[in-house]
Image 1 (cartoon, rainbow, N blue to C red):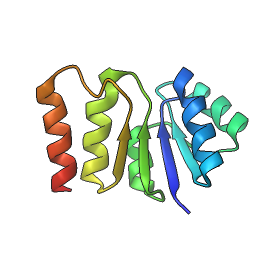
Image 2 (cartoon, rainbow, N blue to C red):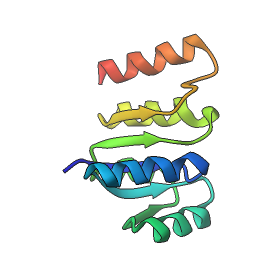
Image 3 (cartoon, rainbow, N blue to C red):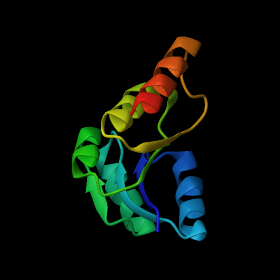
Length: 112
């Protein structure tokens, strides 16, 4: 069973989590810039682990895929964290503000 770590608890996150759960994957953790929002989201979707810091999710590491559902401004930083920790990434669109940032993100993941 795939284990998913969700980054971001905004509007689109509910659709992503519902799809993961319907597909048979297990959403095992959630992080959001606003911790209280992450706690509320986790309770609603029965997600067992909530983190205050994104880096703590990667240090914990008990997941297969990082699903990055934040606003575009956080995509590159979170994708590079995932690559550093050798985790697969799904990143919502738009991927980044510039083509150069997109290329850096892809390169980091390929090298990982």
